[in-house]
Length: 224
Image (cartoon, rainbow, N blue to C red; front, side, top):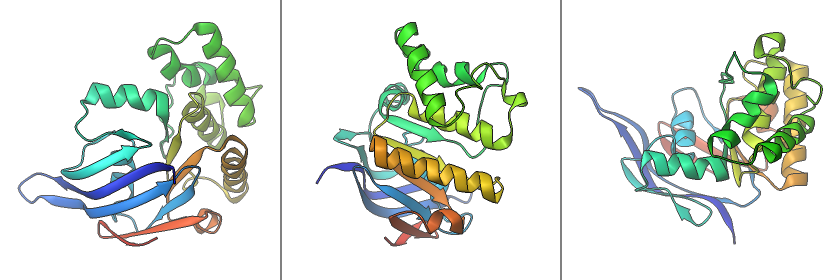
């Protein structure tokens, strides 16, 4: 079986006067093309799991691999370079640059990694079209609704055609109709583009739609 993500005995401890164990001895395999969710209460370790999986942080012990590439032991720069080609990340707070248009926000990762500008523009336009914002490329974030900003963030995550997309509470701040539209968008991209998705969520609207649920409680995987 081909895997999109593999955790092996992963523990994450944040040091300090009173060290915090955010994840404890987690072992999880996610198959290629999965549509899965991390489920658990606030503070259970979901965001820590996503940050480690995407190479935004390092585990205290254990190993993490995306596809056949081991992330553990890579430098911050090496993880960033790998992420720019193989991983998409959708932040709960969108993290769009306010002084850049929607298209420029989507293009940024590809430009930074040195891709051909003409190809970058074509991919960005296609990604915006995929999320239903083909006519919003010249708009700035302040000119877009919350749902539209989230769609730009999704387009940015998709533009490099990643192996897997991680999304941290993507529907938490959205109304019912916008959340429903986004969930349908994720399902369509998973089905048509074969992109793997892993969501961190406690939103029942999303939990009911995923094909796999990974239950996290107090930093440990309790099921899934």
